[in-house]
Image (tube, rainbow, N blue to C red):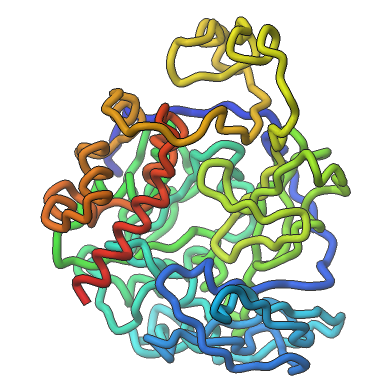
Length: 452
């Protein structure tokens, strides 16, 4: 019987536009994108050029530091263009899809009898290893490492998150196959799955240790689960993987085909029809928004509202994202007595008791825009971070040590255990309007560079 860990710190931000429990197939996109910036720590080196024909699973680029780690096309078609940014940095490889549905063939494997080398090779050749993340540093994993353990979160607690029971509907056999395979890659502590207390979705899964969690967001973050169930020590390495990618791994091994399926939670107060939509990694967001056209006053977010990226109406679903959110841009003037700072705030959500909405039922949902209502201010100790940060870490002191480039302080204060997403609620609550997630990302990158 799995143990239960109760987490009290955190907060559930109740946004309107939660996806319904139904799944529909999204329209097939004309263009798909594989975006190297989605994979933190990867310097891409191209293996294709414009006009090249590709199949699903064909390599597009590889990691400069780990040439065996391939990043492959989600669909068959032609390389439409390579989008570059400053200093010719590769931002995206765009694939113009065709209707032939061609795919690379990979050998099938039985994870119960295959060895570590064969399973790792299959993941590398198909491009599925690109979806494995490493702690510490929250970067793309290195296949040369032997992780202490592999961790999977069995639920998502972020605002408007898709339900895992919907995402994995009809796919539990593939998920089980993926778990058996990951068992060959994990170290002595094996595979861990964090599940929501009372959820029976993973009750029959073999080859993994289950831990139940109770509590508000960010309880669903894999980093929070690791911290409370199996803390990371200095010098150790562990891997994480999303549950849907584990099921995709099962398909790869049992069918010999690369199928980067995504069941996306498409929602938000501006979404015409919030629902779960089945698509592929890198799909154009236009296929996931049900014809919404008010691009000027709407923010198109790939990912969840707290950690996602502003992709724009012409953007694409991030490779590691499982949500698409449409929220008001917040670019309209507000009259101070009705919607401004002198308003009674009857429709305003707050983590404090600044507005009377804290007296309302917990079932009440709110329409929130993306306006930060102010600019960056002096960073002072306010006590706002600690109630929403469920780590045994001093968050303000850690952030200040990063700002000061104090490597010794960062290490002592626990930077190896965190990722930017773990500070998303701190950023939301911050009166000083500090871009906390960016600060943490910069600190992790600087520390990784210093340590070589």
